[in-house]
Image 1 (cartoon, helix red, strand yellow):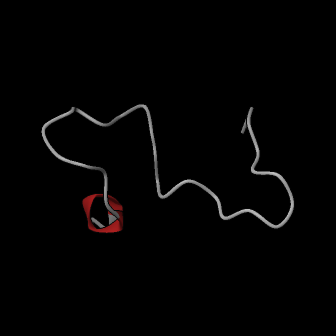
Image 2 (spheres, helix red, strand yellow; image 1 turned 90 degrees about the vertical axis):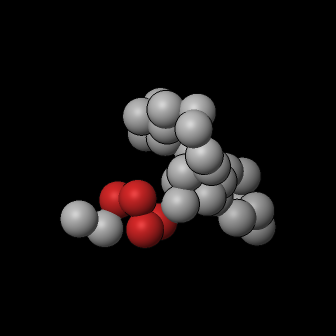
Length: 32
């Protein structure tokens, strides 16, 4: 990963470039 959260900060919630924009990206979208 190019960008990492700074220490003590939570990582972004699955903000992946594969998001189509129809809905927020959630973990369930990637649990196939």
